[in-house]
Image 1 (cartoon, rainbow, N blue to C red):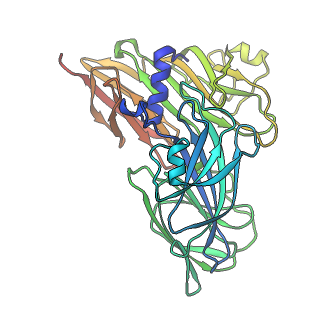
Image 2 (tube, rainbow, N blue to C red; image 1 turned 135 degrees about the vertical axis):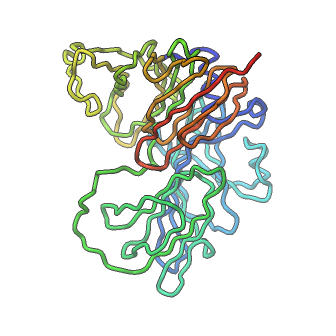
Image 3 (cartoon, rainbow, N blue to C red; image 1 turned 60 degrees about the horizontal axis):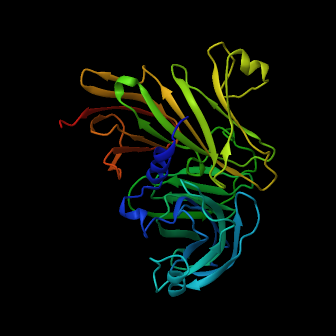
Length: 407
């Protein structure tokens, strides 16, 4: 797991989607947004918002959350997700936001200004928080006869809308997962992989559902809420090697380690990890075969341990209730079966199970074929980046090729 020095800095820049200009005064202030809308009593025009968001501007000491025009905000609360402790905040004008940490603030808007628990660490560090508030917005949430309608453009890419208890979904215009929660309410959830906002409109009618448990409970997770993502940096194809980092948020109380299972056919070297909340290094332990059994490590992804089984273990301080940790694990993989040179053509053939996956081609190589839909961009150092974003709870078969540009 190796992304050192300039490569680690570059990885952080790529993950945030920064351009060379953006590294100056206009770096984005946030990433990894997920919003949950809980619709309150029909006719109230009110909905509770739980906004899980990450501040990423290095050195930032404050975060600014805009209050949408036309909405009246109340019952605000902000929590630091790393520690579970409350954060100080205040509602400020756009003019005040421009002079206290958000130079590109809209002067005509109001903001919730949050004081972060610590400055955002450099080199890809993060400050994660949960912003809670109640909006009253009759244009977005209204009654039409007996039905309720939620009609709102959503710019955040990952969202969920929870219907009031006693209501069933009768129409939804955006492809979404639908899940019945433990208290009987229905959740409509989606990951928007388009470059525009989602023009969501859903309608629900009053109805009574049975209280029996669903036969599919626990068989699939909420894709929009998943926190794992990965970026590959391909070395020259004749080496069959690529550097990568993958990020993951652990929230379960008592957890004190992360186990990375090395895929069969791959060789992992140079493991390292960081706590993105603090910037601190996390030690790595590389185990194989009998070493895994001797350490007493079991994991559902690992399955039955064989002499070829290989894992990397990252140990950290056990989490207390209400705490979480954001990890970045880095390594170098060598995988001749999935990354190779065929004639003059680079071939990469690998399945992606995460919702967010990115591959950065070697410098001087250009995409020529891709089996899966992909977003293509150019990085600040001139390399081509491919983003495979998958809103479905299945794997992507990512087969693509590239050729070197003639000098």
